[in-house]
Image (tube, rainbow, N blue to C red; front, top):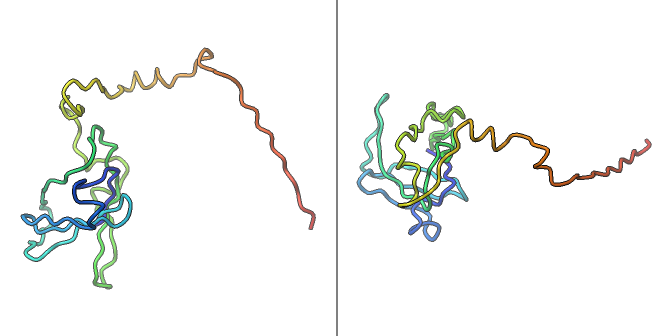
Amino acid sequence: MYFYSMFLLFPGVFPGFHHNDLDTEHVRINMVQGDLYSLAPMAGFQPISPGKSVEFNISASLWSVARTDFMPRWYVTSDDVKIKPRIVKCTASEDLDFVQPFEDLLQRKRWKGDQYEPFTPEVRMEKLRFSPENVVGNIEFQFCLEMQRT
């Protein structure tokens, strides 16, 4: 299974090594390139039955304080050429339904005394509202279009 993480996973391991084994879960996490990671089964991994799930902890280098910190469209491939790559269904949309809501105030705090508060829709609208007082200056663009005769 392939997935993206904007945060460096297992900062004590990556990028020096290119994989980290989760021995209890029998899963290897590979750093493919940049933000792309993969999960691969190791010896002893038990297949996941349809409708079932497996949970394990992944350590990241920074705090995740918003659902949008998680990228959609995780996908699965196989060495068997008869099996086509597929997007993991629950991650297929940009709605981020596969990420649980951040309902507890402590989920949005990075450390004791953190002042960060996510914007409500009302605050976001106010901050993005156009106001003539907020105009700092004008920008002039000059375009030069040349046409080639054929």
